[in-house]
View 1: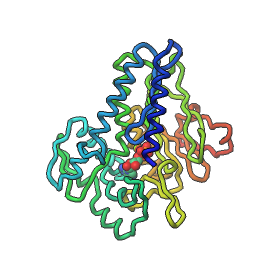
View 2: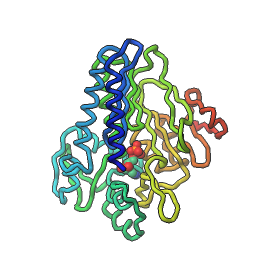
View 3: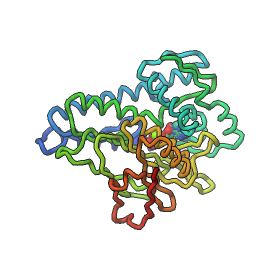
View 4: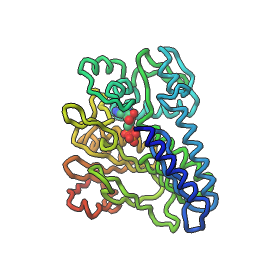
Length: 342
Ligand code: ADP
Ligand code: MG
């Protein structure tokens, strides 16, 4: 299954590379590739765009090799197989782990980078999905808890049996890194799509806002368009990576750390608009876990980001700043729109 996916991605990449060797000023340079277990599409305008994007791809591959949970040469693999011994991390990896732990605390554990053993039990790490028994889940939960991780500077110590994974924040963090890289190369107009995490660098070449299609959690196509510039737009949902259990129920890949079960709270997706990708990524996952009421409460207490919440039963909630920035697609014009105000 994954193999076919990769071959398809490789083909796609080959075609797009051929397509981008010739360009003029109006035409963007575009690159597609498969990394971090997802498709990436980078688009940039202006002089030096091609070189900047090639550099960005290289950077993504470097970060992927450091943060992979399955690659035996990665730093995270070393941490997860340390048997309780301290491990010295590269400073960039230490930074993202620090960020994930801080956000875990800030969200009262809705985000928890130590949830990995539970994720494995549900088969989300191997695509061999199963429904674990309650006893098994409780035993594994005893090996989770961000507050048990010791991170002193760049030195990390996990208790035996614990494992960490940067799945919920890594792509967002990588987005910030490549956006900075592209900006340093003098590019003022680029869209970096990191598996659905969009990093908008500047605005469109003519200075107007980007219009981003927000994917519908109900099926194909986009549910609406969002006008933004210079920010990260990150979506989490249960509509992309999930399995249908023998009981006929749908189980998604975002786990509620409080129960050890996939989130099942009536939300279909959460999109976060934030200055930084890592913040968008951490919040999209954790607000999805929190659910409609608690996510709104969290937003009211912080208000340094914007949010689109879509429920399974067809309601759309927008934080007040988005009222004039988000328009539903015609085919979804019947959805009920609510505004979350401070
Ligand atoms: P995606 O990777 O599909 O963009 P997310 O950013 O929401 O979606 O991250 C989901 C991934 O994060 C899961 O595949 C898993 O690796 C990990 N994960 C699942 N639940 C949690 C959680 N509550 N806290 C932290 N990480 C989680
Ligand atoms: Mg996330």
